[in-house]
Structure formats: C-alpha cells, structure tokens
Image (cartoon, rainbow, N blue to C red):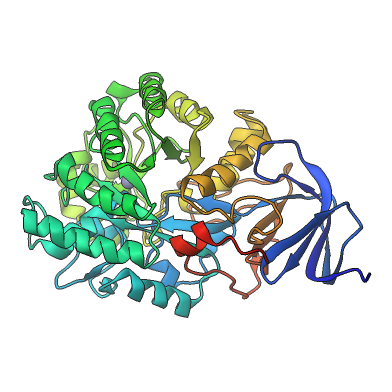
Length: 489
Ligand SMILES: [Zn+2]
C-alpha cells in the first residue's frame, strides 16, 4: 500500500477545530481544496509542505455580518477581511443587499452605504452570483437578500406601505434569490426604507426564505428604549415563518439604555426555549451607519466616516465641525449629508456581556466604502482574539474560535465550513495566540492585523505574514451546495 501524497500538508500545528475543545498537535492534508486528512504530526506527505509547528491552526473565520456586497465584485482582494483571517463573509445584512435591483435613481439611505446607482446593476441573485464568480474574490461570499432592497425595487417611494400585490412582487424576487443560492433574508426595520412595514410583511417574506431552508437576520426596529419589544418582534417573525433568527449587532444603545443587556439577553434566552435564535456582535462600544440628524443627540461622541459634500471633514468629530460652523450637531449632520457616522452609543459592560453570551457569533459590520471607516472593518476578529480573549480573558481561546467558526457555519447552514474535519473546505488560519492583535484604531482605521502567519481559502494560500499572495481561492457560496452536498472528497 502506498502512502498518499496530498496537494499540501501543514505539519505539526496545534489544531483548534472549532468545537471549543482543547487543541491538539497534528498534520493536515489538503486535497482539491478540502481537508483530506488529519493525522498524527509527521505522518502525512504533500507535494507542498509547510511547517506549522508552534502555530495555532483554526478554521477560517466567518464574518456573519458583512456589507462587502460590492467589494466582492469590484475589489476582490478583500484585503480588510482576508488579513484578519476571515475566509467567508455573509453580505446583505441589515435589510440592504446589492441585489436584486437595477437602480433607476440614486440609492436612498441606507442603501447608499453599500453602493452607488451604477453599482446596483443586478436584476437577480443569479446575475450577482455569476459576477462574483467571474471576479474571483479571495474570500467566500454568502448572500442574504435585503428587505429594503426589495422595497426599493418594487416601490417608487419605500417610505410608503406596500400593497398586497407589491408584497407578492417582493416574494417573487426573494424566491429567485433563494433558488439561486441565497442563504436567507435580512431586514432592518430601523431604517426609513422599511420602517413603515409591519411584521406581517416581514413574515410573508421570511416564509419564502424558510421554505428553502434559509435564515432570517434582523437589524431590529429599535436598539434604544424599545430594544425588548423589538427583539420580540424579530423572534415573532422567525417563529411565525419557521426559520432560524439572528439578531444583528446586538446592543443596548444610548446612555439611557446602558446596562440593559442583562434584560435583553434574558429575553433572548427565554425566546430560545421556543425557537432557534442567535445573535452577532462586534467588539467595540461604537456603532456606524449613515449620519442622520435623527440619530444625533448632542450627548454621545460622533465621528464623520464619510461626507459627500464635505469630504474634508472625514474622520473628524461632529461636535468640532458643528462648533466651527457655529451650528448644533443636528444641523451639522444635515449639512454633511449624504454622510456616514460612527456613534459611541454603547457601554463597555454591555459589549462584554453580549460578547460573553454563549450564543453570540462575531460579525464585523464593517462598511468598506467609508472613507474613514470604523476600525471594526479591519480589526474585529483579531480584537476579539487579542484584546477580549488573551488580555481581558472574557473566554478561553477554543471558545473564542467557536464563536467565529463552527457556531457561525451551523447557524447559516454552511455544513462543510467552519470546522477542521475531513471533508470540510480547507479554509484555515495559522496564527500565534500570543501575538494576534488588531492595530486598526478610530484615528487610523485601515490597518491590518498582526500575528497571523497564513490564511488559506479553499486550499489556496492567500496571505503570508500580512501580505497577500495574489492567489484568490474564494467563491460564491450557494446554499444548496453548502447545505446538502454530502459527497466526500
Ligand atoms: Zn445593521
């Protein structure tokens, strides 16, 4: 019997397999983009061999909350994500997806966060998926179809209520999306493009996603005083439609609600007794979205992340800009618009409590088009592993890895990703637990992580010590293939 020779073997790394169990030393054999063998250190042979002794090897990180819809096509190097060890992103969150819409007008906020009119050029998810595969991104792309995008597609004015016929049109668009491989449906009832919609409209759409085995992610209606009612609303929709709910970027926003994560997490725990509910969070006390005078209260610090009429103020404190102009912050926000803002709206204690909750996945919520983005775009995953895990000891390392790999893959139906197991995709991160850290800051946000030696995507070596190799192994993930492909490599 001859010893098999694999395409690639990583020798002697310490494997954290995603299950939150302690690491163990082993060789990993990669063949045709999949993990073909895991065996005692020194026992496997490959055409290419890499010495991984002294490094941790974990499944590639899954960014379950991403807005890279357009980058997947126009900037396929996906540097901000890839350099932090992310090998899969789930785009189309918060009710805003780049598809399906061929824009006949300037995209209204918040759709302008992810693309310009020219970028909204895909009538169907099938067309977008083909464009992603043609572009060949470095990371895998999973897509949620956004409620606001459906509304903007079907309604001339998305601030208006949809008729029964218009809801049917949205259902048909979503049906195409699910048939073409979308992972589910997202909503953002907080936003002006879908605020008017009641939960009946959300349920009618979530049922389409449910029929295909998709998930429902919700940027809830109110993360401030109404946070509990809004969690119930999202869970009610998921329960009525019969599908997994994910509460997006969970937070208790605004000083008046600081400390209420005790209450909100108890609410999630209660709802979980009846129905599958998960949540995602990013490791920062600031959020980021459009700059809207309605979201500016003059109390919390706000930074300008981009401004169309006044790009000279990108990255500046809104209070300073307002003082220079001799106006209040709401008026300054109005003059800067269309614009984006970074809002220091959370309390550190809530951020920690939410991150430490066992059902919390990590999602960056990064906004890659912003001129001066929130540092979560480049730093979310290494910040969890360096700051919150190693330094603050919020959880141990195998558990931190589980929240960015296996838990995420299971929640989104990616059965052959997010774990080190024979037959799974060879999406891998090789890193130093002592050195991994984020370097992106609010002042200087476009900075890659440190302490990551290699990133592999579908068996393709994509990053070495922070430098992109130029090889791009990512692909569009289609739910049917990811979920039901039982074939062994
Ligand atoms: Zn959101």
